[in-house]
Length: 83
Image 1 (cartoon, rainbow, N blue to C red):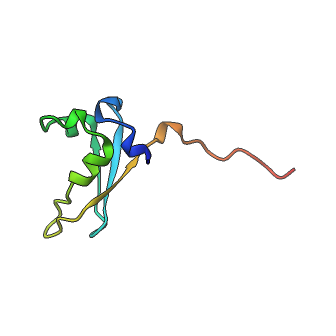
Image 2 (image 1 turned 180 degrees about the vertical axis):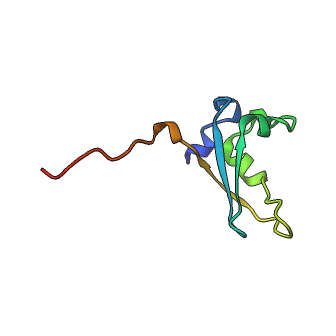
């Protein structure tokens, strides 16, 4: 089981963005919870189900996406040194 099969769309924060990368053409798209919830019934889906249903809209592509969670608020610079 991956993290995508444990988190539903409704569990996401309103400002949380998901990174979608097309496996065919490499197109990068960011989507928010509001974007997903525009389709009826999608709020109840798990993220792996959203990933399976998503298709790239790039010109002539129609490839599948790989989803990643964006966590910019948790990133911090390396603080350390040589002892």
